[in-house]
Every structure is written in C-alpha cells, then in structure tokens.
Length: 184
Length: 206
Image (cartoon, rainbow over all chains, first blue to last red; front, side):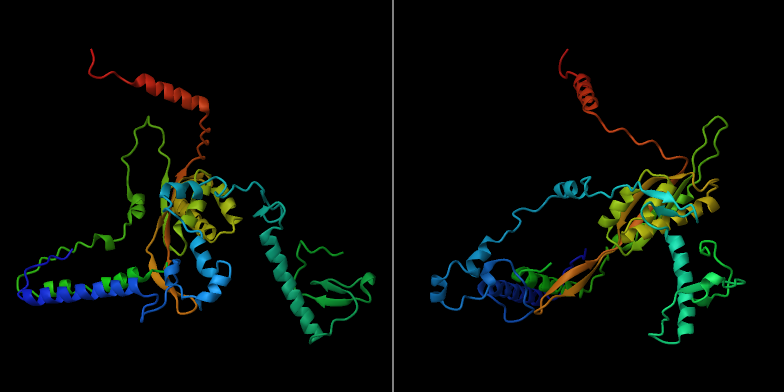
C-alpha cells in the first residue's frame, strides 16, 4: 500500500478532498433521484423504480394489473447461495461424468472404438480413398450432370475387367488394391 | 454482470483518487513498500520433478517412480475441467486415455495430450520400463489468470465478461492402480461413532 506522507500543501489537499466528496455525494443523489441518468450508458435493472412511467393513469385503472405491477412479482434470489450449497449441486453424482463401459479395440487397426460406432481410424482411411476415387470419377465425367446410367466399378493396378463388368463404367486407380476393399 | 446506478458511479470514480496523486509530491524520500508478490506466478509443480531421493538401502521395497506434469493457461474454465480431472483420478493411464478419447468436452482433448506427453517423459527421463504400467495418482485443476472484457448487448447495454483460463496438473506413478476403496457402510459409521464415545476421557476428576 502507498505510504501517505506529510504534503507541503495541506490547504490545497483539504480543498480538493472536499470538492471530490461533494462530487461523489452529488452523483449518488442524482442516481437515487431520477429514473434515468442524463449521461452514461443505459443499464438493465430488475427493480421497478427505474422503469418508464405508464402512458396515462386512466388506462391503467381500467386494465388488469399491467406490466408495471407484475414486475414486482418476478422471481429473484432472496439470499446468496453459499459455496457449500453450490458444491453440493455441482458435485452431485448425477452431474459427474460417467465412466463409459462400451469401449473396445478395433480388430482391424488396433485403435480404440466404441461398440456401436465405426472405428475412427478405419473410417478415415476409407474416407480418404473414397475421396481419391471421386476425384477420378470427376476427371472422367468432366463436369456436373454427366453421371452415366450404368454402374461403376473401381479397378486397381493389374486388374482386368471380367465378363460380369461388361456394361459398367470402369474407374482406374493407380495403386495396389487395399485389403479392406474386396473385389466383388 | 450489469451494475445498478450508484454502484456504477462509484465504480467509475473508484479509479481516480486525488489524495493519492498529491501524497506522492513530497520532498521527503518515499519508501516504496510494493512487494508485488501477487504478480509472480507460482510454478511449483514443475519443480517437483527435480527432487532427488537418497539411494535406497538394500532391504527397502522399491520406490515407485513419480512423474509430475502440467499444462498452464489452457483456454477453458477450471470448473468444467474439474469434472474431467475427477473422471480420471484413480485410473490406469490406458483406461484414462480411452475415456478421454470418447468424451466430447473441449478439455478432454487437452488432458489427453498432457497425459501422452507425461507418458513420453516417464519413459524417456524417469526410467519407467513399461508405459502402460502407470496410473494417475493425482489430477488437479487450478484457475489461471482471468481478463475482463466488455460484452456488447443490444440497446447500448453492456456486460463485463471474464475470459477464464485454467491450469491442469497430473501426477503419474508407476505400478498398477490401487484398488478402489469400498464405500463406507452404516455399520462402519456406527462402529466409529461408538469408538469416539469410548475414547472420551473424564477431565477434572480423580
């Protein structure tokens, strides 16, 4: 903390202190007085005291309790929630993360996978290869809306089309056939 | 947090205190008692890896290796990170990595990286033979430095939001994870209570 030493201008200090106190006092008074301050950003408040006045007294008396009255009935916390109460709520077993028991090892690649979900690594592998096949298809078709009405067959290095694949469109891929992509 | 009228005014004027400006303009020497210890970051967890124990005697059981690792200033809330830290508390490292891999939270990815780093450090520097033979002895979160920023609402209103960061600390110990403690039964609690009553001594008597 700062050490306040004896200043050589005591009269100036006391004068400034008095002025400052008056300024603070005036500001506090102005806020407690009016509904909206003349300067500064507008702030959202819960209390009804700072709401704008209703349009006219006659319309309010005819209607059922309008917005002005129902504001007083809004729910608001009465007391601060203690840290003990907060901890009881946050650390309740229902809120803790549960341990998953459906994790297995993928027999193909050896990574972890969930029982009801495809293995992420194997899926990424297949996705990458599919993307390359689609690029080849795109090159063959040349543009949009050129898809033929026949089936497509993907052949890898050193594979010849058999008599079963006569009328089908053939896509060549310049690599060895992956083990997971069986022929027929 | 939106401030009400007078609190906002007091907050505005709070930063300006003219008595403080004038007090500094004195001819006598000012002894500055700014210690500013709060500005120094506490970095004890990193130092824990440096302790060296004296060599063990031949008859003693082997002391299991301990590896301390942490990551600082993770852009996540320390309350949210706490849930993940308690999830993996007493598990073996493989089980912990499995659980974190299939968890959807942002902190799960960060903690997984930290655990893999720590496992790597253990094998390289701390003479751990099998990288699966580790379990998590302690996993703790702490809050990092917060910064306050303005969040702009409609109609010229504003709120002050805090950008929170957290630290994550983990201690790996060699060996299989300890068996989980059985939950305390009512019978055990009653036995303890009776034992407490029996331990009482009579004071100021013969």
